[in-house]
Length: 329
Ligand code: SAM
Image (cartoon, rainbow, N blue to C red):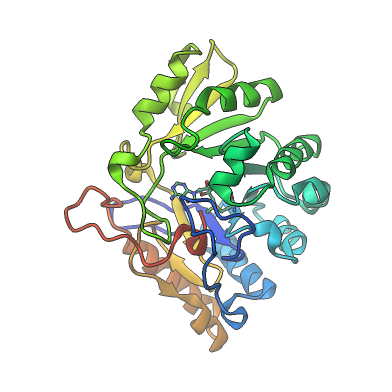
């Protein structure tokens, strides 16, 4: 089991398949992109599958979420999903994606064993999309969402980050859009994880503000807290339910006390927190012939060192050196 010194157990593995992305969302990376990880540093599909197998068969991982960068850019994604789906006990398998290419791949991924998707969608306005993501790809994202739904990758969840002065007028239209189609929307507070270090607390659209914006147009009631479990989203029933909306107050309403996540970066580092400043290098060990026992021991030790909280409010808070795209969101 992956247990930390506060008794939290990590069962949810986020696996980044690449640090590359085909969008340039302002809260994540600069318009010119980043220096991508060199190819030899990336785990191969076989190495990823070996570590996922170890996590599931030996370390109690029950959920595997593939992410990035943009995971749909990883050519071997269907094979990696199929290998994860063949593990016993079979983990829940999901994907966090910007949806570009999903129209083509949703069926293939569902057949490979993918259970569901989270698609990022911050706006329904094409011009705002271009301003925020520096690419004219809104149509592809919406088509990807529809294809995921049709392929049965449900419940289709939608992630939205609101940025002041850019898309903070979109809370209500985004929720209406998702309600009409049966997608579950989650708003995520913007976190200090952008490569440009441009995050400012005073600019952040807070969970309180988001809930206020939604309450102007919808009747929101607290959902049963048991339904939340260790999930980061605070859930509300919309207009009496059953439809729900989630708000992830990562900064102002942290949920570190129930965190059950651990991350594997595309270059084979275990991170016990999004905001960790230390990593544990499984790639070097793996490529030096480490046994499963040795890898499991390193992984267990990395999780044991997990801190009580992300510390954004601590006076000495330091943003991690890796941006979100290179960690795996
Ligand atoms: N490319 C995929 C996507 O767009 O979903 C997966 C990776 S992306 C890093 C995962 C999620 O992290 C997205 O929903 C994105 O909106 C969110 N994200 C990225 N940077 C963020 C930040 N600084 N604060 C909050 N959420 C962020």
